[in-house]
Image (tube, rainbow, N blue to C red; front, side, top):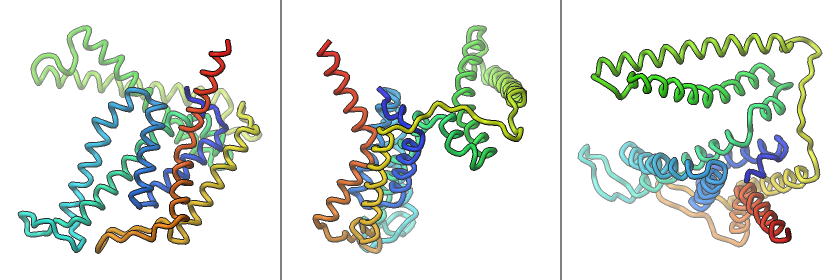
Length: 295
């Protein structure tokens, strides 16, 4: 169930670009909560159970660690909770701001995790291949290299483990030698892969003038409607930011902007924007269930 991945690259990229930028700019607790919940929800759809483990083991501790670090090093605020052994005050504002920064960082990481699943290298090259051909190629190769490197590392380590030369077997010196052998094998594989990629690109005429690129992406009515919805919601949220409906300050004291019907509507529009792929996935799942019932 990855229906949003089948949409046009422009729609995919526009969605992630807007929600990631808004997640960094909108520091209101309500908007941060919306970003975090929607980011985790869609990451669970794209990544499955592994994402649940990733969130519980890495993301939540990262949020707590960010809050602690900010509280220790940032002493802005007027509400003093206590004094640290160093003599600096621990303020409520610094704690709240630390949690806000941790939530923002967690939301951005989860959005990027989904981005890597949805916006593949061929989509990125399709979008930016003519504008910035060299940079788009390098970026797509890097994104492709990381999962390939991880897979190859697991294969090499499995082979070393079968002959009793894994990095967890034997004494410290033996483990170090086994680790160096795995590292040497991975470096050799990386260099060979780079040479093969260069030869393959040269044989396909990369860099020649007049060379065309094949793509099977079609911008249909579904993509047009979704893109219009995303742009309208983004414009509404930006208007709310300019008017001050998303205003929230942490220092020197916590100050919340006036809660009006318009500010609530901006928050709702932002929720719909962040939840666009989740809504699409749920809608398609419901349609599929109805079709199976009618069979």
